[in-house]
Amino acid sequence: MLERFLKKVNFKSLEDFRQNYEVKIPNNFNFAYDVVDKWAEIDPDKPALLWTNDKGDEHQFTFKEMKDYSDKTASFFQSVGISRGDKVMLILKRRYQFWFSILALHKLGAVAIPATHLLTKKDIIYRCNAAKIKGIVAVGDNDVIKHIADALPQCNTVECCISTGPEVPKGWHDFNEGIATAQKFRRNRLVNRNEDLSLLYFTSGTTGEPKMVAHDFLYPLGHIVTGKYWHNLNENSLHLTLADTGWGKAVWGKLYGQWFSGANVFVYDFDKFKPSDLLDIFHKYRITSFCAPPTVYRFLILEDISKYDLSALKYCTTAGEAMNPSVFEKWKEMTGLDIKEAFGQTETTLTIGTFPWMKSKPGSMGVPNPEYDIDLINAAGESCRPGEQGEIIIRTDRRRPLGLFREYLYDKELTKRAMSDGVYRTGDVATRDKDGYFWFVGRADDVIKSSGYRIGPFEVESSLMTHPAVVECAITGVPDPIRGQIVKATIVLADDWKEKAGDNLVKELQNHVKQTTAPYKYPRQIEFVSELPKTISGKIRRVEIRHSSTQKKHAS
Image (cartoon, rainbow, N blue to C red; front, side):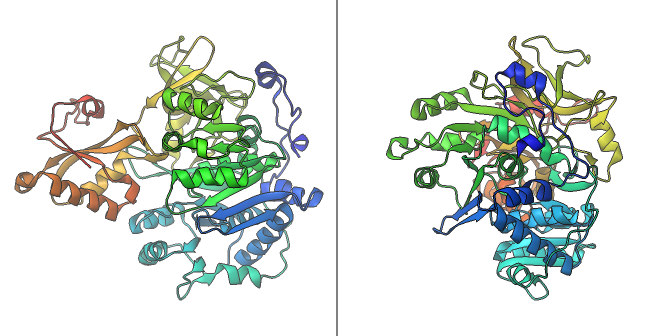
């Protein structure tokens, strides 16, 4: 399969990879037709997706089945009015219907918007109206259905809702019945052009509402490096990436690069993460390749791994936040395996990685992906010397890399600030050593990474400010040995609430955030102060808050 898209597939060294990696870009490329359906044609019984859940259910789908189910889903979507260019939000947890749906939307030339099931009414209203969403496909769980139903009266563009069950509210379409009775699907002559929008993600920022990151139909080609040369996959691989389908990491590790490589994607559908259950999965199914955020590895090394047979596991990777070298060393001591770290954003594919021909350096992200022209620049705009901190940038003046987003949808000014003068500014700060390895320092814009989630301070601050006790607040991230970072709220109280400062008020404010925004965003640590440190222009100095240890802290 990869021979169809790469001028050279196998490389002897990192230098060979850097000099000779090149993608052959087809006209009107469509991942669903040109990769999934092609596998179904040349090897119909090839395993594609092994889905399991925490209740003991499992189903192995072949590429032929993925083609057939995505065709049925596309036909069903057409019958409810979804067509080329329409935007459809997918709130599907880890259900296998996610893969049917995203492939079907690709086949229609429509736009998939993966979203987490943790969205509240407010989150759903904002996303539907900001993106002009036409349809929603969701799991039929009580909480998810309730939030969507509560939001719908204020979602001006939504015309249809589809549930995968078990609950199918009145007025909603039944996904399973819809694909069971779907008419034969017929492909349109022109489904898409390469530059058409195919995928949209909402990502947190620090100065406003979540941004809409728009990717085109060439985006999957950028993930060839992710699957083949970072995860190191082949046609015999059984690969597990631990990620909810609402997050960008899902298409990084559970779809595009893996199926370019012909790997069998393993899906473990669970509601509550238990390290011992995951180790049982490794043992039972003989997982060969694994990717997860560092938080997961931190939990795994606390278990007695010697009780499990992990002999099939050959390759481990991580991304999403910086990995502590001590976790790397402990995992290697327990399994004999390195953890290959990498870096990327919702706006990109993998941009920096630790590839098979390289020695791993614990704590390092690795070296640039040859698809991207990457540099590290200081405040003066000069390339950084070894050891000097600078912002990671991607140069686009000579060519536009595959996998780089097209724009922040409907926001030309924000797009221009991020991408101008032949440069995309990532907003991430790093250092580079004498060997060319990059080392992550932190986000320039203070986005918090906790347990693999990216949390924008503005969203949490906005939630807290709706409570009558709060006059002013600032959200920052503080180090945590398990989660990487936790959310901290520094709060100035209203006069008539100051006497109530204490554990009970902390709990009340935490519950308030859980109820008004996604529960994972609530501040696990709260500090009450008389005033917030600010610049002369009135901007909050979060850096000073992070380093402050002079005020009394309340934690839970």
